[in-house]
Length: 100
Image (cartoon, rainbow, N blue to C red):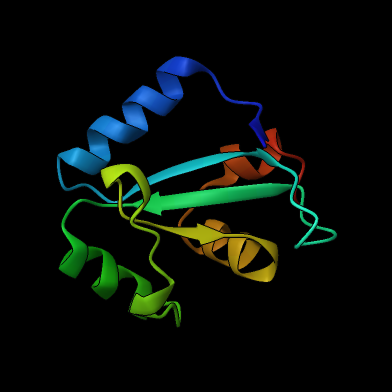
C-alpha cells in the first residue's frame, strides 16, 4: 500500500519516466514481506538501457527492474534506498520521510 505522495508528484514522475529521464519517487509503503521498511523509492526510466546503466553504478541488477504498468523502475528500500538517495543528493526526500 502506497501513501504520503500527492497526485501531481505521481503524475510528474510518470511523465519524467515516459520522457526518458531517471526519475525518483519516494512514498510510504507497507509490505509484510519487508519488515522494518516503511518507505520505497521508485527509480524509473522508459529508456531501459539507460536505467540499467544507472543502476549498475549502485550494484543493481537488470533483473530487478519492475516493468509494471509501462513504467520500468527499480524499487529501492532498506539500505539500498538510503545509500542511493544520499549519493543522489535527495536530502529533501530523506528529510520528508524521516531518514537519517
